[in-house]
Picture 1 (cartoon, rainbow, N blue to C red):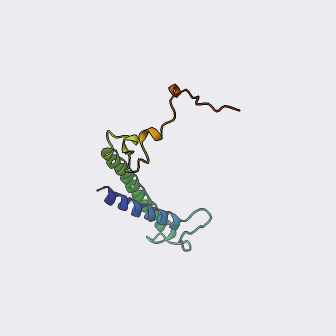
Picture 2 (cartoon, helix red, strand yellow; picture 1 turned 90 degrees about the horizontal axis):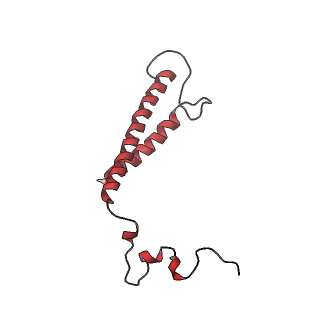
Picture 3 (cartoon, rainbow, N blue to C red; picture 1 turned 120 degrees about the horizontal axis):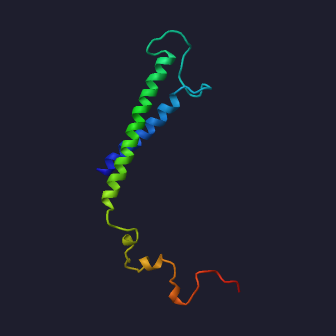
Length: 115
């Protein structure tokens, strides 16, 4: 389920980038607008409002999939810690004790000492 939502999320991200790049900026940019005149559906003003509405829909869908991915990930990792995922391997490489700083009762200081 998480993979499906992630793929939809990626498609929404690419579509959102494309729609934003198509919009007319103040300086022209990559916007696809013709000359002025008329109040038709595909006039520059009509295209701008259509692109704005599409942008809003894609942005809302993108935020919803972001929240959905967060909820799905939280449900998968409930009650676990990053250190719980570190298990000793057959060669004894990484254990939880290897990633922790030294304790103060080991006789050493945690501060660097100039020699």
